Length: 273
Image (cartoon, rainbow, N blue to C red; front, side):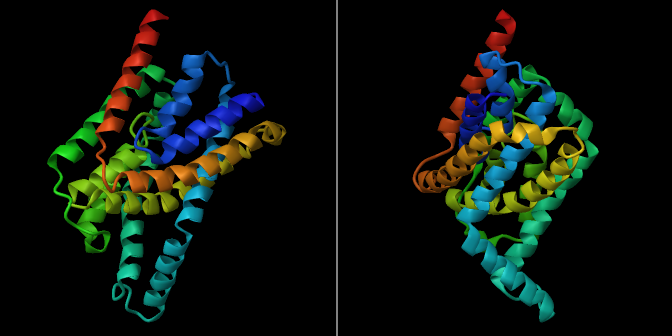
């Protein structure tokens, strides 16, 4: 992978990790559409590191919120009143919402890896993302605030996140839609979705990093990757800020249209080739 390729993929990762259009799909489909022949091991290492870069961005953006939630959560445990404080209860809900995706990742790991190797499968899953976004906009009521979530809502949103382990199904799209299905307003659904990204991205990043360091000579790739990782972190931060502002006044339909268009393009290219 060249430095230019790393920067471009880093920018794409930063834009698509939190916009509801599937970052995993773009990391699979961009090299496919541009005809890049990136070795599988290099692609794996870059994908691990670029996810960590996006994790750094979301932690930086929500640092105050995360610190407040963590402090309240620890205080609740210490005082033996784990659910008395609203922020402590939110912490427990975030943990609960993480469980389904963690279990799904362990149970269907081989299927997910096969999907990552198939641009056509990824393109088909983009249509699934589009359908989820449209359904969320059409059926949701959007009356509740994030503080009104209960454990059933957290499980439901967690199940939505679990299906997004496949490339092409947007994690942010699925979780925002899951929150809207529970009656959350769009910005509240997005905020919860981004907060719950932290534990699952941290867990998956640690697991993938462990696999990465088992690969001989992986450190020699880092100099070419670093500009791409920096680009990913910076763009991710501003993508979060932009989307939260966007969702206060506008719908998810534009992202559904984009997913359909990209999926159709990839299918057309695969047929031509």
